[in-house]
Length: 239
Image 1 (cartoon, rainbow, N blue to C red):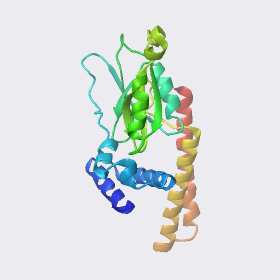
Image 2 (cartoon, helix red, strand yellow; image 1 turned 45 degrees about the vertical axis):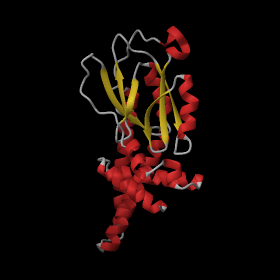
Image 3 (cartoon, one colour; image 1 turned 90 degrees about the vertical axis):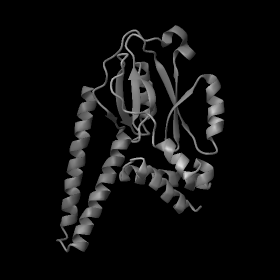
Image 4 (cartoon, one colour; image 1 turned 135 degrees about the horizontal axis):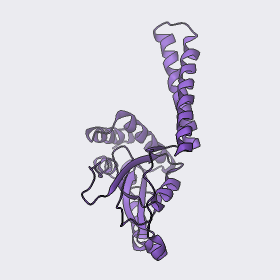
């Protein structure tokens, strides 16, 4: 199977699982970049397209509030901030139960029985998977989610810190669900400018609109991106 055929099959399987087209395109682009660095066949690196799609699709449901009174919270972050935020939220008693089909962390916390959790992220693929699991499992690490070529592991801090891993007071659940680093926001802004630039060029070339359409559309896109970034920054200060 060629690389193109593999990713066509993977895209079809993800589409069947309900993953959005934007997320499929982003996932495939990231995986292609990874293969370019490793120079390995996709089946050898990730396994079959169908099996890999099943792992990427996520298994944790967005369930209703559990009967034991546990809190649930779903949030996401970019790759530049996810490990830091997992450490912060883990210290607040949030246990990651899995990643949903959009790559968001699905967390749970039980008042009165919450523990501090520690997390780690590992690069995992078809060839690396068994080795990573064999290395971390004896140390008490449990696989709690996978997304593209990354795997997330958890263990209660009581395993490494003893009684210090217990949690007596639970901070309030954060009011935010999206956490982006400064670098992630900058990349998002650049991507937005590229998209609006392409839209402007298309309007000029295809629909024969005036040449000033391109900078005008770009200016609108930049303004929208700036407003969004300022709003996120304000929320970050308040949160």
